[in-house]
Length: 459
Image 1: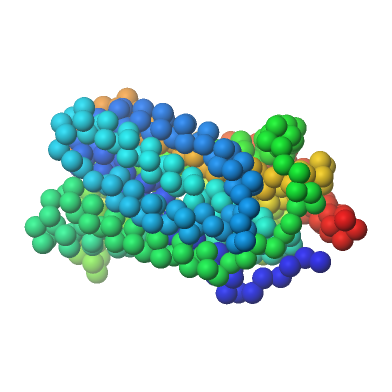
Image 2 (image 1 turned 180 degrees about the vertical axis):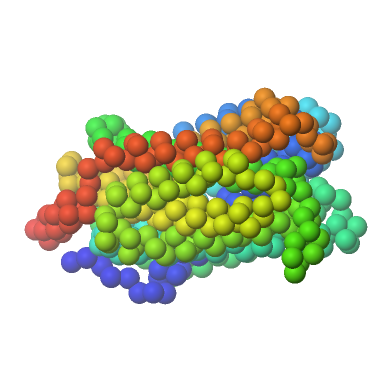
């Protein structure tokens, strides 16, 4: 019989993504400009660093999934990692946003080492956390609900971060800290909060779904995954979605600092560019959150696949329009942000719910369950999309002649505008095109879930 979850447990599961999302958004929205404008690394070198470190990190995700699948404790396979990794996650997060005076080459080496460490510990806590959803319940509708709670947590964490970062940075600057120290002290606050929330997720969740068999074979698990065409489809769609998100996230600070700049607005008067950027990020995440809330009713009416495709087509069209907006058209900038944010938000919980379906589909076909490996692929798609988006951001800045903390040329401004509009639009449209051939409809999955429940009962 499918397990129904209490609201408290769903909320507790969402706490985990509240924690990790604060850092995910710190990385995607602030790390590039921190490296270029505070640490003073070249954008091309940062783009290459993102590519190399994140590629390696993406390959670690399936390894972590295999390890988690073979973990056996009295508290479960996946939950213990939330306990074990909470403190290391917080400590290394602060170290990543620290900037010792090692000279240009030393700073780049330090960035490589600390960022690689951060990505390893991020994987070690987030692959088990993601996999946890697949074993908390076998009810596909409960999983969609659980995914929605997860993303409510994620966007709440992101909103909290974007709404407070500009003011925390200003607070520490006003009290004598330079830009580098201001970032370090600000990130330390988020690190403590993240550790606490991970521990709360560990305490208030439970693993329930047991595999049909306890037989374990890495070779067989990988072979099963390699034959799962639906996994490859979701991997491609997931990568494209994250390229879309990563390009938008990584370009926001540059867009407002160098293109929009400070603005005089009705009612608000003179508003500095960083406060506008913070407000834009916050609106982006609030509308993402509203999109998450729309995911369940929309997918119940139209199906997960059709909802995904429609939302990404809308996001693509309105992102492309963004290129032609003038810097003084603040109302239009924020209005487009609302539409794109709603569309992007709808898709993300669907991805995780569809990966849970893929895990069930794999077990149904093979008689073997590898939840951690399947869910690690979703994390891998995030990392790969984030990798490509981050690298492309750095390379585009360099290609269009960006110079940190200087007045930009028309060419470099064009590059910044493309990074927040046309290039993300291509990623969104590509994700929709890939998902056209996905075949695990909601009706098809209902049959699979019923059959698996019968097998478990009979077994």
